Image 1 (cartoon, one colour):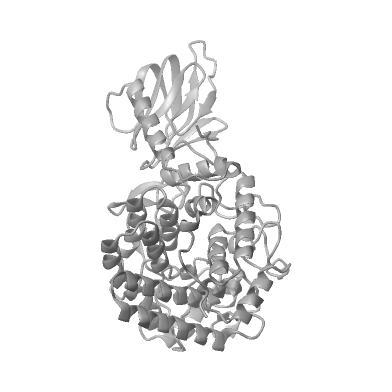
Image 2 (tube, one colour):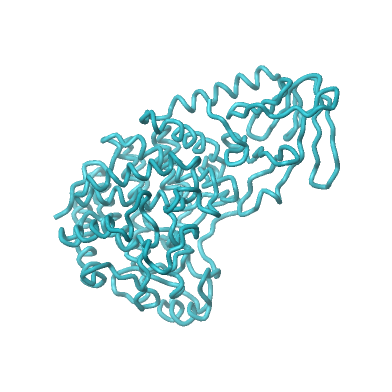
Length: 535
């Protein structure tokens, strides 16, 4: 059974907001909440167990099933809302947030947190063991050298599932990220499809069900509603917003709220899920919503009307700490239009599956024309330019390479990008840094300013395969898996120089778990499907 360290891997349960973690003065039980530090949601702290003589009984093991103290005392989840403590001839003590101290003489199974009730220790333990055995039995096979980290990833996927907006949503992390972020949900669906296609579909539907009237997909779906617009501008300022965004797009009030979403990958996720678990009814329901979401970028997120949509806000890129945003509050790195190009190809495949060949032909024509426009306007002979507020951004980021994701680039341009990826600027023992190693803006520990992110590597692996560079794709996959397997946990991001957890990265991160499992599995039928490089 997987061992929990009660630090990076807390004792928690699928569907539960409760987390048990270890601290110097004992165990702490806190409740996961949207955008709220656990220190502010503490249910009880300084939980210790002592024998009749007053001697502390230490924790001797912690698994997904139970936390075991010396002396035969255990913490178990009776249900997602109820944490019980079971044992005999021992005393448990703890402190409430108001500072009051509490003591309990153990003589059976007692509710520690949750509604009052009577529980049988044996029955609670048996049910917990059965739940976890069933979950781990659904884990896809992986190579032996990746099995330990894959089991941690598989556990992470389970415990990050919470009731959100009427569905079971996988949150990025119970350590603060307690909501369903748009593109996180799509990456989560990729991993969950190995366990349950219905669970995977729910992640996508959580986003599609909250589509706005203009076609935009929200940034976040959370307990209190959705986040779909904001005035918050990290590393930017409202004067620029008023001057550039408000003036260029009449639909946006000057210096007012800006629409926020996440990169357009919904059709990609839907097609990937359909290829592994076909469901035409799901496709038929999703297709019109995917079309409206795709069109939103061209009607509402292309302020200069040049046919190449832009991110109107850093949040919409998902890379809100990237140095790209040091040059203005709206930007056009080449990843956005690369995603849109491939989304058009995905929509074509979905249309084909729905028996709509006319739609499919139009989408493929659109993808080809969009590729031509991207190359004509943004390729300068050495790189795809990034613009911010209409001016060139000098910093070199991994987004410069994302046009490989389209699988449609002219052969000579694709080869140039593959060589750039394999150069010292981006290739190392642990590729790929989000900012080039030799760029002045490179910082190995600052979120999107240097660290390796597993979702970026995953998309590059797919793009390399689609663009005809299978060998490089496989090497990037191997190095990515080795970095994650050797680092000790499923983190938000990794230091590309050391392979260690990024200094401020959270642990138990959903898409890192989902995509690690998918890359580790990497069966041919679960790759990108029958894609071939486009002419």
